[in-house]
Length: 264
Image (cartoon, rainbow, N blue to C red):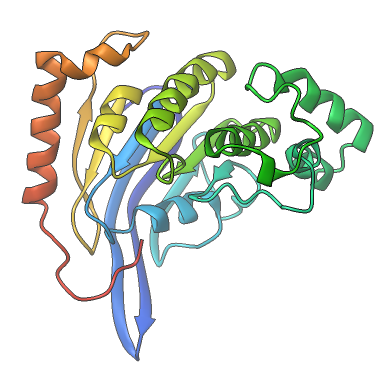
């Protein structure tokens, strides 16, 4: 059991009906994330990682099981956590600054106050000078930073990130990973990251959860003892390589998809 739990899931199961037949996506999932912790979830494609984030975010409800935020069991989670999904989801008809303040406007913050809060952070997030541009003028990395800043501005204690860097090239992805770590240390939030990249999970995380193939459950949780601040050269360290080999072995032993089709 971890201290200062922000998120706790107990025996969470999710079933759907497909073509009149029951489909179990998640089965008996246990998961914890502490205050200020960065936790990654990895596993085979289709094992239910994104479904799990949707449940934590309140976009979906479990078939059974318990979900606790700040130690309190709750079914009303929508809007309580920040959620950055796989695509940046920036509105092309809104400028960068107007995209950034969208969540604040929905919370009832005045346009002037929302813009001021966003402008105070654009330089820090590498967006200074681009506030009045439209998304088409931004690089992939800048779009991701804009999407993350929009999540930060919502000022929730928990951020859920679903494959946020999957569409980026390798160099940009590495740069964004370093940038995310520096931002995480600054904002001091709890972050849950879903990724298919084992190196990324190790490099960023305090702990890594490994899910089995569908129906997804937690096969293993590993604490990453690499020192912080993390540096890119750590990926060549023998300890990093050992951790990666163990996690990859756990994924393989967790099995591939046991039926056709996939639910992310």
